Length: 184
Image (cartoon, rainbow, N blue to C red; front, side, top):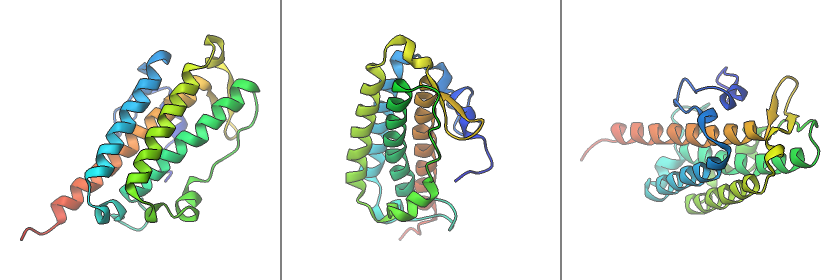
């Protein structure tokens, strides 16, 4: 969901929606920050009603489970991009069509507990990839699309923002669903 925002900017500045300023995270703190957010996702996916997790508030807004699957896959896609950039800086990474992935991978039909486990595992792997970097590799850069330049540091911050922002999206939707549910 593009929402008309230049999401690539979230590696440099605070998000006007979720408030996260990932640029304030030191390189060494990013692996822990990723696993902390993964744990919050795990709690959300373990405690929410499955029907509520699968519910889209409107047709063109993802469900909480779709946001969770997107988060899981962002971790995997960007971990691979970090490896590519660390090995061969300056390359074109290409565009991952995340909207198509929602449909093609049937995000809303997946099992929440398995998605939570995968988010945790992917966050650990991503964090380990960051921990394995030499200090000079953090500034290695690549482009996702024309004009969308990422350093490895920027990719890590971008991913942290994706995780936090979409967890916020999911939590807000779940709260709204709870308010809408009639009391008996």
